[in-house]
Image 1 (cartoon, rainbow, N blue to C red):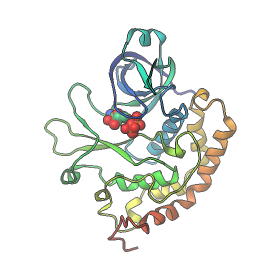
Image 2: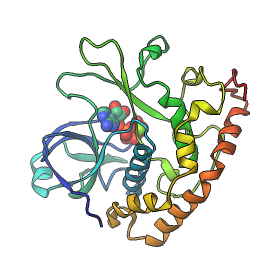
Image 3: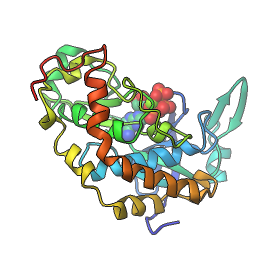
Length: 270
Ligand SMILES: Nc1ncnc2c1ncn2[C@@H]1O[C@H](COP(=O)(O)OP(=O)(O)OP(=O)(O)O)[C@@H](O)[C@H]1O
Ligand SMILES: [Mg+2]
């Protein structure tokens, strides 16, 4: 594994909604983290995909949460009755050991985190351009889910701050493959793309992808606990090499979406 410091969980706060059945925990550094467990109902590798996807997105300058490896003790699981996974009618305790932690984007006691904003409020998202830029990332990394984001407005502030979350379906989740369908990895509402007129709207992310250094991808891959990908180092190497090769295909992948029946960029002039 790696030199990145592991944190440990100290308190269970609450269960979150969603397919991976994540939990909000307080950690030894006194910060709060959304934690996805190794025995989540989706797949063990979701942890590896989300870790790498989020670290790569952050490297490209996208507003994604900090991700860490968090150690959850047997003691905390035994003493937190809610730390369980419900799967096909069975209820199991969450796994102990190294899990994936994504830094909670707000103050869990004071702020409200919104999963969706009505269209009229979209103009009030200070970093809304990131929702277009992240399309270059989602196409490159083969995000096989829709693009997800959360929005937070602090009391007395006028603008919402958006954070791009849930990179667990990058690299086609546990498959580490790239189906490249035109409508994968996109935001569920076209108003996100209203202002798009050309390639410049994907910058600086698009050029950063095209010029990425493979050493940076390797560095991120080396931070992932081996147990999250069952020690399949060959699979991991293949993934990094494929990703590196795909850096020059991103414009074609965006073009496939642009020319799809959805017609997401009606004001395109390039
Ligand atoms: N870093 C974060 N900060 C604040 N809230 C978050 C963060 N990450 C996730 N959440 C919240 O937790 C919920 C579940 O997270 P996420 O979407 O990553 O998991 P999921 O299980 O894949 O969910 P789904 O199946 O609904 O997509 C999100 O809808 C969001 O409300
Ligand atoms: Mg999700």
